[in-house]
Amino acid sequence: MTENPRTRETRPQAAPASSRSGAIRETRAPQVRPATEGWTQQKDAEGRPLLQFASPKRGKPPVHLADLTPAERTEKVKELGLPGFRAKQLSTHYFRHYTSDPAEMTDLPAGIRDELVAGLLPPLLTEVRRLETDRGDTIKFLWRLHDGALVESVLMRYLGRITLCVSSQAGCGMNCPFCATGQAGLTRNMSTAEIIEQIVRANRLIAEGGLGGKKADDHSMERVSNIVFMGMGEPLANYKRVMDAVRSMVAPQPDGLGMSARGITVSTVGLVPAIKKLADENIPVTFALSLHAPDDHLRDELIPVNSRWKVDEALDAAYDYYAKTGRRVSIEYALIKDMNDHAWRADLLAEKLNQRGRGWVHVNPIPLNPTPGSIWTSSEIPVQNEFVRRLNDAGIPTTLRDTRGKEIDGACGQLVATTEDEAASAAMA
Image (cartoon, one colour):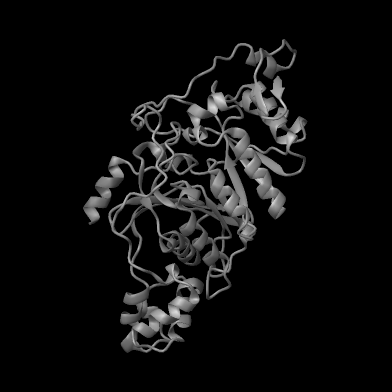
């Protein structure tokens, strides 16, 4: 490698001959270029992949309890002509008992329940479809929003934790060619309450024993322990609503869900100004950067937002997040056969991460999950192992991601509203 120490611009040279299997393979492996398969990528007037940062204008969802601060909830209740303390009671039902059913709110006078629920707990998500793995420990939900937009979330039971992958946008405007979610572009941002409602509905299902994978009669004390903003959408492109949702997640019950910030992961493809804002929030969430290539030449094509903020800018922002918060950063890296899995790219990634220090980062390589219409495939297992080995040998803690839900199209990069989904939604409307 040759490098300009000021710009950190690194240019790959021909790989030397070596007895290591990965090095032998990298001299033979072709360089596949990113290209869409089975769909047409949206382009701007200059022929570049279209990036949508602003949400299209659509009718706003109804204002919900979870959109409001505790003080605003009290004022809203007073506007309905009711005592302010009713807001705390309603919050207890929603954030602690995970219900919007007035029939279950027996501590409220029967004469006001329906009015109070209609005013502060309007319906936000209609379940269109639910798919489960054979063991029932992974469930994918398809939700219809008030305006017909479709989003998905995925609930997963692991040993010692329950994780929910939430959506923050209907669709996505980042236009990455290997991700199913971005194929249709951005429909709109989700509201704070629409994000929170995914968790509340999941917690309700768990409490009722609807999540498999654990033999127990009483699930009433179980709930989602970990949140990953890795569903539909680019979370940092919907910054305010996502952060308001995070505040509600970590607020003590009954003002919020009482979750630990350390169990919440916010992921981004690299919106550098928003990463810097996140570092100043003083909320110790886990930050994940979806990198997928260590060199600008490939990442410009693979992650279109790289045309705005280059690899080193994104990595600098990620390191600054660590420096300000003390929270180790996660690097997400989808391993795609013959595209970004070359051994020299593992070496380059390690070099760039170590340039910024030690102990600040963890790498999560993810075997590419198949998407409809794509001929791209995940890296071969020996190549995956070599990629991981090189990073670990360079002192970068690296763990191959255990992805869940492939058989129900619920794994990373697979969330997308299909024509079949839209037909099912229309039939319910």
